[in-house]
Structures are given as C-alpha cells and as structure tokens.
Image (cartoon, rainbow, N blue to C red):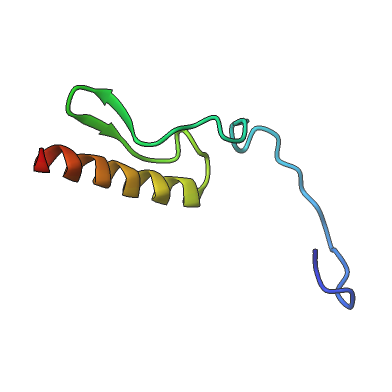
Amino acid sequence: MPPPDRPVLAVHEIRGALPTIAAGGFERPVPAAEGVAVAGDAGDASIQGALASGVSAAEWIITRLRG
C-alpha cells in the first residue's frame, strides 16, 4: 500500500501471471535424475525462490562431489 498521502492510481490484476503453488509444497534440492540437480523458479515461482533453488542445487552438487 502507498503512504496515506499518495493515492492508488490504478490496480491491474493479471490472471495467470504466475502459477498457483501451495505454501510449503516444494522441497529443495530436487534431483531430476542421477547426477542432475534442478534449479530455477519452477517449484517456487519467484525471484527469491529461484535464488534459493540455485543455492540448494549448488549445495547438493558440492555434497555429491565431496562424496
């Protein structure tokens, strides 16, 4: 919400702009196949989700490489 001294000029609802994802419905990291890590916003459709997914995938890869 804008500060009280600034009115809302317009609101635009864009249906279908992001997929509907239930809270807590995505677990990271997600290995897609043996030796493959999935990263991006496919499971948690947001920039923050994509960043967190990349960190989790990197941690998963590092763990696998260290054995």
